[in-house]
Every structure is written in structure tokens, then in C-alpha cells.
Picture 1 (cartoon, helix red, strand yellow):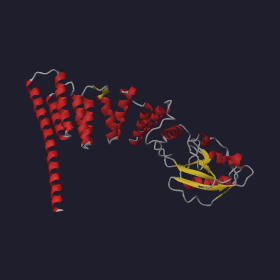
Picture 2 (cartoon, helix red, strand yellow):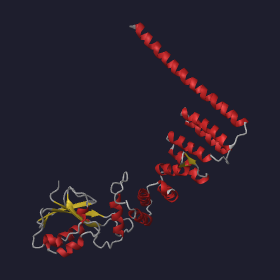
Picture 3 (cartoon, one colour):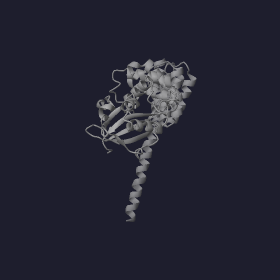
Picture 4 (cartoon, one colour):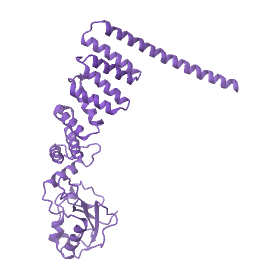
Length: 346
């Protein structure tokens, strides 16, 4: 048993030794290749294309060994010593990707941005280096004002390479984050004007069209149906029902995207947005309501159970919603009667 263990140990050691020798052998070849290329670079008169070939080979040698720190040092030193090299944008692009590979996103962002600021554009395998930089910067930049700048550059410089509908939506969202609401509205309008705005599927933004449509339409509306507080809205609606004042109750409905639908329907369903008159369903009826709002109500949404409506299902939940509208502090945070859920809660 002891002999068997010793043999296994010996085999393991030999395996490690052979693997180490193989790696050392490969590394030695790469190191020798690097030295040969450095000598050519230092002693020969080379045209720009020849110099590019050598620098690219040296960088790829280091990349093959995943020696990202050495790639960074080599390429940044080269760019510093050769400020007029036609391919500096490419060397700095490789530098930025090397930083990305080490998880150093702030440094990668610095070099991607530096390429845009300092270097002429080049095509790499048919792709614009500036375009690649902008794509990466949008993903890694942590500052909305910077992302706004990069998205605008993509739209203005590379409209043929992008999905402009999606970019308008993402630009509008960035303006929101940066509290540039007038710009956000202008950009939402650009988004809505695109022929595929209502059908496009944007990752992470399943309600993009509905939200943009609601904000733009709400901005253009009178907003005269809103109440400062939920208790005021609840009291007004209950008073109108109690007094059989269906005309006034109709006036309390939100004029933008008011819905009436079952609990299983989607608010985006075209059938849920049909205009209804409360008078048509309440005339000659005694409508009742609960004394208190439904227990599922919270600081942003509330439900009032009512019954007795002249409809296939007589139970309706009136849905109240807090308004999000930072453009106008007098309206933002107000409440509106936004819709009706038909039937008992599921």
C-alpha cells in the first residue's frame, strides 16, 4: 500500500515537472521572440506598416500569456515615445481592453475616452475604433452626464451602426437620471416618433413605450383632475358616489391613460384603455363602497372596493395612484384616479 502511494506521488511530481517544463519552454520561446522583435525595432529602419506588424506581434505575445500588466506598460511607453504613430489609437484600445481584463474599469474608461479626445479614428477589421470606444464607455461609465455625451456621439456620428430607437430611449432615461427634464421630454418625443417605438423590445425596459407615452401625454395635459393628497381624492370620489353625482365623478378620472380592465389584463392591452362614462354604469343604481381603502394600499397606490355597478361584474376596485412628475413640483406627488379593476381581487 505504501509503495502504491509512493508511485502515485512520484507520478504526480513528474506530471507537475513536465507541465512546468512545457510552460517554461513556451515562455522561453515567447521571451526569445520578444527580444528578436525588440532588436528589429531598435536597429532597423521600418515603414509604418512594418512597425505596426512588429508592435502588434509583441502585444499579442503578451496577450497569449495573459500578461496584462506588461501589455499596459509596453504599449503606454510606446505611445509616449512615439506620439506621431498612425496606430496609437489602436495601441491605446488594446491598453483599455487590457485594463478591462484586470477589472480596472476606471482606467479602461480613461483610455477609451483619451482615444476619442486625442486620436484620429481607424478601422479595425471594418470596425471604427471610436465606435468601439463609445460602445464600451456607455457600458462602464458611472456618470450620467458622461453617458449622455457618449450616447449623443453614437447617435450623431454612427447612426448607421446603431438601433436609433433604443438609443433615444436610453438617452432620455439618462437625462432623467441627471434631472434634465426638458431634454428628457424632447428625447422621449424623438423616441415616440420612431416607426418601431411601440413594438421594439428593449432589454431591461419592458414598459418603455407606455412610460414614454404617459409622460409626454401627461406633460401636454391640463392636469386639472389631480388632488394634493390621497385623503382628499378618496373623500371627493366617495362624496360624488354618495350624491349620485356621476358627471362630477367622470371629471375626477385621469384624462391620460385611464384604464378599466380585469385583474388578469395588461394595462398595455388596447381594450383596457377604452373611454368609459361612469354615468352609463351607475345611472339608476345605488353604488356602495367600503369605509376604508383596501389593505393592499400603500404610499404610492391605493384601492377602493365598490359594488352595485350596472355591468356584467358589479364589483369594481377604483385604483388611485401617486403622480411622478418632477417637472412641476406643484403636481409631483399629487394623486389621481388612474383606473378601474373589474371584479374581486385575485
